Length: 409
Image 1 (tube, rainbow, N blue to C red):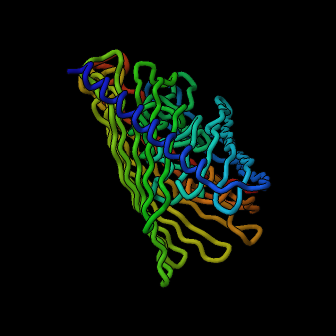
Image 2 (spheres, one colour):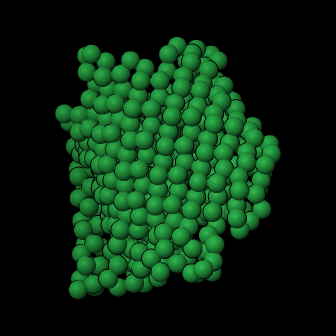
Image 3 (cartoon, rainbow, N blue to C red):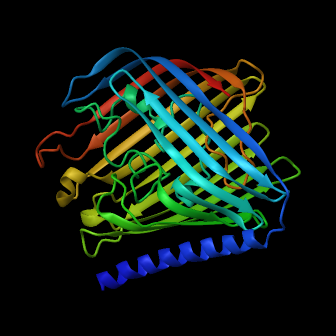
C-alpha cells in the first residue's frame, strides 16, 4: 500500500509537470511571431538596521541584558524580454540576508526562469510553494517580524534566541517554515526548493497554483515527490475595501518511514480600508514520521497608516512536536508579539520588499526611508529538555525595546 501511494504521488507530480509544460509550449508556439523583443531590467530591495536593548532569561543557559544590533536585507533583480504585448520571459533572482552579533546567513532564496502570458505563468528553478506565494494574512509590523518565513525575518530570533540558545543557531527545528514559528509552511522545511511551478491567469479575482519537486533538499533529506497547491482571491471595491483570501495544501513522500505522509494545509485573510489593514492566517502540519514536525500555528495582526505616521501590532502562536522527545509526545510552544510605530522620512512609506507577485508586472523600484520603534516580547517553552523526562527545557522568556532605520529602493 505504501509503495502504491508513493508511486501515485510521483505519477501525479509528473502529470502536473507534463501538463503544465505541454500547455505552455503549445501556447508559446501558437503566439504570433514578433520582429523584436523589448528588454527590461527591474531591480529593488531593502536594507534595515536595528539597535535595541534586549533582556531574556534562559534556565538552562546564560541569560542576557544589554544593547544589541542586528540587520537584514533583501535584493532582487529581474531581467526580462517582452514579445508583443502579452508574452514575457525572463529570470527572477532574490538574495535574502541577515546579520547579527553571533549569527548571520545569506542565501539565494529565489533563482528561476519564467514565461508568462495569456496561458498563465510557468516557472522552473529555486522557488517557494504556490500557496506561500499567494499567501494572505497579517500585515507586516513596523519592527521585527513575529513569524520567520524568510531569512530576513530573523531579527527577533537573534535578539531572543529561542530554540537556539545553546548553539548560536539562528533558529532551531520547525521555527523557520515550520508550524512552531510560521504560518508560511513547507514540507521541505526550507524557504525555497527546486521545483516547477505554474499559476493560472487570474479570472474573477481567483488564481490557482500548482508545483512539483521530485528531489529532497538538505532540510528534508528523507522526503521526496513534493506536491503543493495554492489558491487566492482578490477583491478591490469602489468603496475602498481591499480583500485578499488564500488557501494552500501540500503532501510529500517519506522515503525512510513507510506509512508516513507528511502534509500541511492552511488559510489566510486580509482586509484593508481607509489606512487600516487587519489580517490573520492559520496553518497545520501533520503525518510526519513519529510526528516530529507535526503542529499548528496562527498569526494575527493590525496596521494603521495615516500620512507619514503608522502603528502596528502583530502576534504569533505556534506549537509543534519536540523532535528530540517525540517518542514521549512532548510539545514545544512559541508566542511572539511586536508593537511598533513608524515615521516615513520621505513621504512614501517604504515596505519590506518581496519578489514580485506572480500575477503582477515586474516590481518597480520603490524608494523610501522609514524610522521605526518597537517593543517585542517572545516566550518559548518545552515540555522537557533534550535529555528526556525530568530534565528542564531550553526555555526563553524575554523582551526587546528598539529602534531602526529601513531604506527601500
